[in-house]
Amino acid sequence: AGRSALGHPVMQLAWVWVVPTAVARPVRHGCEPPAWCGVDFSELALEDADGTAPPFRVSPTGRRRDALHILRAHGAGVFRMRLWNEPCADGRCDPAKFAYANLTNVLRMARRGEGANLEVVL
Image (cartoon, rainbow, N blue to C red; front, top):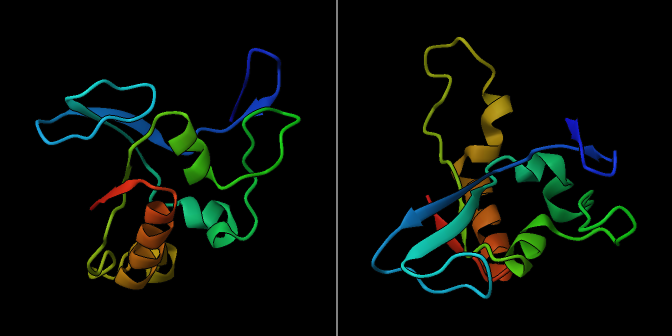
């Protein structure tokens, strides 16, 4: 966690990326085609209780909103998810820590992304 220019706590929760592509659709602001502007929010459900308790705001005094809707409103058009296939097959980690990226939870997050009018990429 860091501090904003106004001294407010800021936590980076996603990597924002731009990918040149010939099949991209334009977004309202931000990227110009041919490009996708998007985020990797694979662990978002862990941060906001699967959308039921979003801690995210556009400004320090703004109302809390779903991060996916905030990102879409600010130009993101793509939402990337990781899908793990037995991340702890070697027995050296706890599979419960990677449940956010199992098929059931990835499908749940894909529906959230589509509900925010974001393309979903695995």
